[in-house]
Length: 199
Image 1 (cartoon, rainbow, N blue to C red):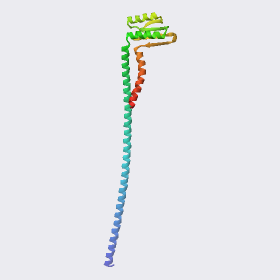
Image 2 (image 1 turned 60 degrees about the horizontal axis):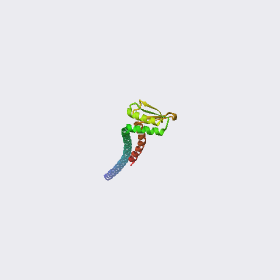
Image 3 (image 1 turned 30 degrees about the vertical axis):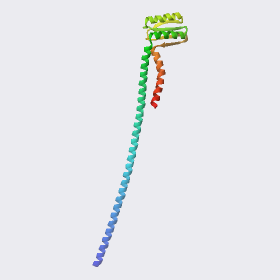
Image 4 (image 1 turned 90 degrees about the horizontal axis):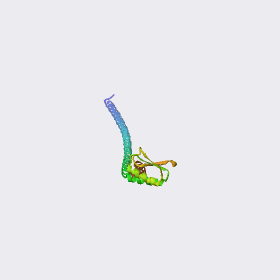
């Protein structure tokens, strides 16, 4: 083999080795790029999933917060309504007790007896002022429409009118009047308060 052939062979081998190395290098770079693209796509997908989950959690937390605020507002409204109704009842009790004077009691007894007719019996409080009780008894005896007048130790204020023949009995006292007024007014006030809270 000649030196020239040997040089040519070496050059050819060298050239082939460089080509092979270039091809391998290109393949390695392509593989690295493909792997990097795959990692990048997976990272993008993971980021999108994390963002989506975070948005869902944030929305759920916000919805829970809004719901809790609405419930708290409803609870506060109900609490304020109840407090106002208690205040209304206390005010009614005080006003009715103040206006339930002996003079009013006398007028009420006479008016009720006048309206129920004969055959009724009257019970007055045991601790009622003696002069008032006597005055009521005197005026009722003149009308001759009562079966009996008696004292009731359990009755603190007001009076009880009973008509046994018809099977009824009514107690007229500050408490009974307050309860009647409160029952009517509380419904009206609840409606007013509800309308106010809806606006």
